[in-house]
Length: 335
Image (cartoon, rainbow, N blue to C red; front, side):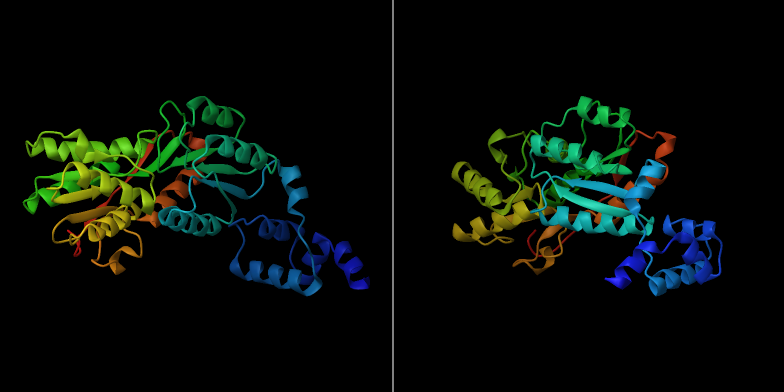
């Protein structure tokens, strides 16, 4: 009890005396400033540990009217790629000397609105949002008007006056489809995703562009929407085979969709990678461990995270650009 009372009475001045530095140097260390030498920072941090000083970030936030928290609003943390992206963002934000607060909207725009409303009470420094289906530009723009920097990731919201960082979805599925065409396949399906999200339209457009350039007529029955999970992949593949049993290859909206497609192909008595070629999109860590190992479009989650943090670091410039992250084809056994 006595030691607790003592720790509460410790001040920044005490830390400065213990470290042998000025009060302003201690303040710079506490706020994560890069204007302090490593030697001075180490002295201050050791003094804090030695005398038990506790930095009241809530009070500091009230004084500065800005916290060092960056809110990451992910659309679906059950999706392995979303989790991979969240890890990359947390790492890059930490390297900026800030902290991240991660929440999951679960693809629900009402949940997203409620989460953001609550997060605003923490006076977060910025919002990084993967927009849930139905996100309106007016809602996003109102956040900006309230003084909150906002960056959209992975999806676009038409009319939103914010920077958007996303993979080159169009180029990715075009590359995937051309890869299948080069192997001699002509009956190629596109499965997964749904029309309520921008990345679906971009990826579908890449597929249709490649098929058009190859002078293969568009077939609506070969394009099946589904939930973006493994079970969605199974159902979409079942629907394709029910209407086009002569299908030769499948371009999937994501790796997770491809996992489900491979499972249903095998369950239907065909061999994935031999009877029906399959290619995904994302290049999840497990994709090379699949049987057969999954061919896919590689999207570097860390590069997306770096680009987002570059935007945040220069947010005062007012950039509203769309930043596309390049993609690569990874060829494995599935197609």
